[in-house]
Length: 316
Image: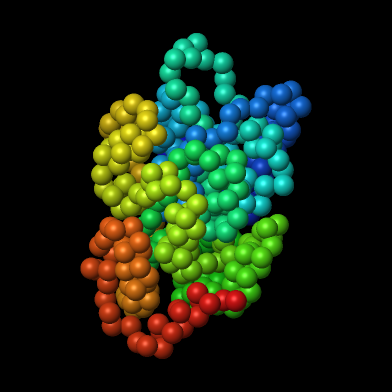
C-alpha cells in the first residue's frame, strides 16, 4: 500500500481535503516553473477518459510502471474540461520527460481524467489538439459503480447525505438544469454534473456515441472493469498491444486497491438493476458486446421506484 492509499484509508475527511488542496497548489507551482524554464513535454499518446470508479486509477498506476511510459505530473490533468483555458504550454508542462540514454525505446506519455468522457466539449478539443491519441475507457456494472461512487464521496467528506438511498432520491434535484448548462457553456465546471450523478453517469450509452462519432473506432479501446480485475495480466497485454509497446511483466502478488463498506441493501440493488437494464442493452448493442450485467439483474422493482430513478436522468 502506497502513501496515498494509506492517507485515504486512515485520515479524517477534513485532513484529506487539506492535503489535496496543498498538493494541487504544489503541482500548479511546478507547472508554472516548467513553463518559465521551457521544460515542456510532448502531447499525450494515450488518454484514459473514464468512467469514474471503474478502475481508472488502478489502470493508470499499472501502466506507468511500464519502462516505455512516463507518468504525468498529476494523474487527472482535466485539461480538456475546466482547465482548457490554461493553454497548451500548461498542458505540456505536465509531461516533461527526463533525458533518456536509449532513445530507440518508445516513450509514451498520458493521463487519466475520468471526467473527460462526460464532457460534451472534450471530444472535439482532443480531436483538434491530439487527433491521433489513443483513448481508453473502462466500463463497470453501473449498479456497483454508483455505490462505489457514493462511498468515495463519503470518504472524502464531500457527500453530506448519510445513506445511498437518500443520495439517489436527491439526485434529480441536484442535477436540475446541470446537463443543459454544461452542454451550453464551455467554461462551466458543473460540479454536481460530475460529482452528484451516481445514477446518471452509469448510463454509458448516453456518453459513448459522441466519442465514437469523433474518433475512428480503432482509437477507442473499451475495457470491461470486471475483466480487468479478474484477468488483469491478459487485459494489460491487450492494452499494451493497443499502445504498441512490449507487455508488462506478470502481476505477481499484486493486490488491487479496495475499500470496505457495508453491502448495498438488496431492495436498492434490485431497484437499480431494474433501472439500468434497458440502458445496458443499448450499450451492448452499441458496442456489439454483452458484458452480462443484466443476467444477474432482479426484475422485481416497482414501477414507482423505476420512475423515481428515471427522473434522475432528466434533471434539466
